[in-house]
Image (tube, rainbow over all chains, first blue to last red; front, side, top):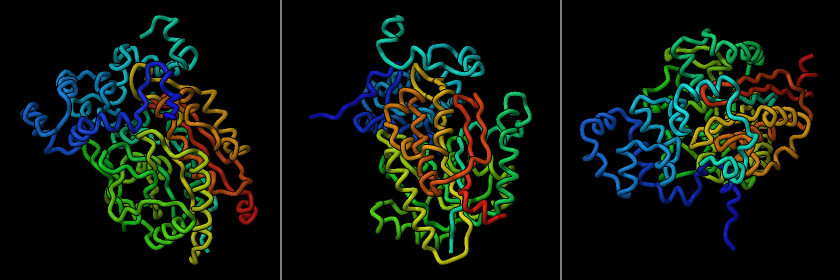
Length: 134
Length: 289
């Protein structure tokens, strides 16, 4: 009998479990390397050469180059790792969240100041399907 | 004899540390966040803790993906603030009570909690932000007013340890401290939370109602609260809300009968609901009188 991944029906959410940890291992190791200044400098000087040192998939590598923040999570990245790439680019946690939600930074900040995203209508995938949210 | 007298639950939002480090705590955005910790700082000072046992999580800073211990106990002489990508926080190095840490490690393992022992470790905002909010501004040349034993819990790669496991670990920490033969006042911090989701399209989730019942039940109904399944945290309090399991370690280490001394709740700090509570063992309150 397989594991019950009861968290897969939460909309707009990627729970970083052991399977995603396996898929994203090299991507995440690349991201965490950027917390050290000399590595940030080397990456900034030549992104391609720096990325060559990490055995990530072509898709993962492209998502890094594109700074496709949601796809990085879909391909096994974890937010605490990908936030190191964002920090390298001068993007903080709240700005990154604004980008991932598709709302944009200003609208996201305004939503947080107004009390955040309500759990109402945001608990189950079918609630998003019915609203036509993707 | 060493004794645990009180517990503190506290969010550890990194932006709170940034606000303190850059001196903007009086700005309208931050003022209500810090106002709720004014009483806490007075309480902390009066408490005269010798040691804080601080339960927190690393945020893929010191622990990369090569090794993910569920429970890692800091046994090193000291713990420097780590560079999380924008330079280390300008706060003092954290000093350990190394003999008590070794004693706890020994006791926990014989008590069947197979923790990982860290003889070298840096610490990230998960540990330093609760220190800053409870003790106030301290620069790199200052010292924290007490020693700190860090317990780092994996809540990043699912699954985190269950609330039940964390609660029972708190009980085991209590037994360990109770059996240490030095007169020490120990306060336990459980940190992280409250409701927040940092990632993907549902980022920004906040559930004040859920957080409030969590704070209420922490005092009155801790055993049943510790049975909360992970799916409830994830769905109701956001994917990063599962950090709240660490509060159960703190609650487990206290007496069954506690009194709520102080509470603070505010939305938002960056992406997160800031929650904070101070609990004292009732019998220690009597001892003070």
